[in-house]
Length: 306
Ligand code: SF4
Ligand code: SF4
Ligand code: SF4
Image 1: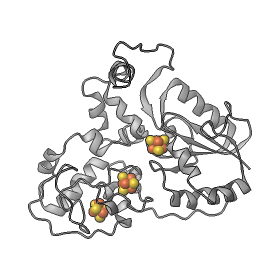
Image 2: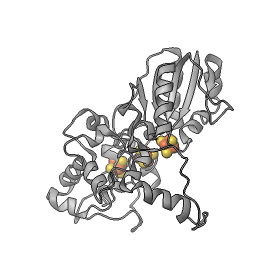
Image 3: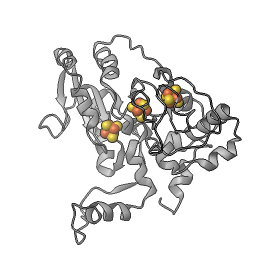
């Protein structure tokens, strides 16, 4: 059994998450050879006969596109590993800025660069948008997470290699959270840094924008368990993926309306920076953008960024 890990536009955190299997990595390498991974070995080109390839990162430029098509041709099974690969991830947010703005900021605008620096003209050409890998090639399995948590990877990678059945929960982050719904009175949206959440009480009921109800499980609700609202890094819940009429934004409005009896229009008025608070991990997904009720197209088009 030969396995490979390809890197596209991402931070390599998903590959490091595979190494974070700790002792379980020994079980993996007992049953399979890792024949290609630019992050963990000095190898430049994937071999031809790969059994399972994991692809991490989104498709932002022509090089990413070429690498994705090559690994698809060379692998019998292709797995999208991590939220960048599954839904575009944080790279998708780049679509709210023009290519010129991004290059100026990266090569001239940050503290560690010289404001007289040179913007290179030899880097691979940006595509007109960010793509999730499934927008471009057939994907056999999706493992979302930024990065996927060690416990979840353990449940998936070994059975994938041995051909055993994979059994996973298909619920939302709320199903893994032990916070209880508090009494909801005079609800208003709070910014994350405002106040201190009451321990043990649902963060959404306290006014914090917790995306637990609309986010796929698998992280053990690690943020709410540490007093931090979920910001959706595991990607959308299954009902959002399956149903064209369901979207992160509209389901959150509906959930808060049910909780508070405030009219949906009034709730929507309280939302701010919707790209970052609702779609921080999904803007690069054509599937998510193509939903009629999605706000993604509107957010990208603001200011003619595409
Ligand atoms: S999903 Fe998260 S951890 Fe994985 S490559 Fe993207 S940014 Fe990095
Ligand atoms: S909304 Fe957030 S805090 Fe409330 S139950 Fe769901 S995950 Fe927990
Ligand atoms: S609670 Fe939400 S943001 Fe935190 S790790 Fe889980 S899915 Fe990601």
